[in-house]
Image 1: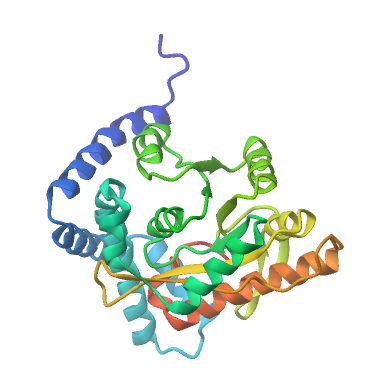
Image 2: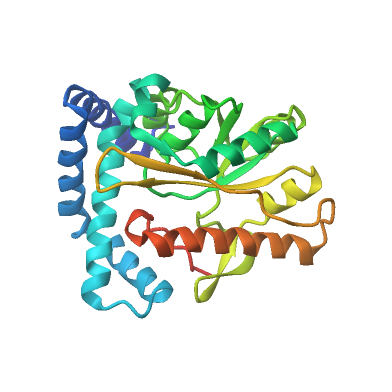
Length: 296
């Protein structure tokens, strides 16, 4: 009866009710209180777990001129931001666009860039990073007249994945072979794909990121070049540790369309890394430093 039931599955089953109860708890709390409370928990717990040291080492590698106190302050604020994302998640899922837009500022340049990419009528890839509250951007853009889908890696716990995936209110494409076909079909239909381009991966190419090479996915560049679609930088910044955000949509990157040579692909991939690096340098406390980004 229990032959196919591993200890990992048992652990996943035990975790799911706590996640479900946590989501209900944070949803019951007022938004600001849920955000503050979760931020405090994350700061308390984050300092005591092993990945806190990884975050410090990553900061030392990327921004070596910072003092130890400055790095510790950035890491403390990183945990604050991550906690806020967790506490805000059930509220964001329940929000209509009319509610959400009251918390998201979009400058005139970003509005102009959105209008321009819509006029191209070619769809495109919007690349972003785990920054600010990355759950908000796709839902907001969906209501700016862009037909978007988000590419994501499912959570390790399949039971928690079922609890959270459908609540986001945005079409989701799972990474993998089937997901790749969905991406291509969406682009052929002139739709937009949102991809987080800052994650550690096991296969890819070594491309410079800050002061060292990092294994970086080249697939984003390859798809954009092959299907001749715009590659658009987009990021959302949190303002003043509050549930208030600034959405930035920049002009598409310039690159040689149709040229899928290694030189062009690596050049475009480097541009993606440089753009993400610029966002992080501007607000390092809002990036997720616990990615083992420079692991070779």
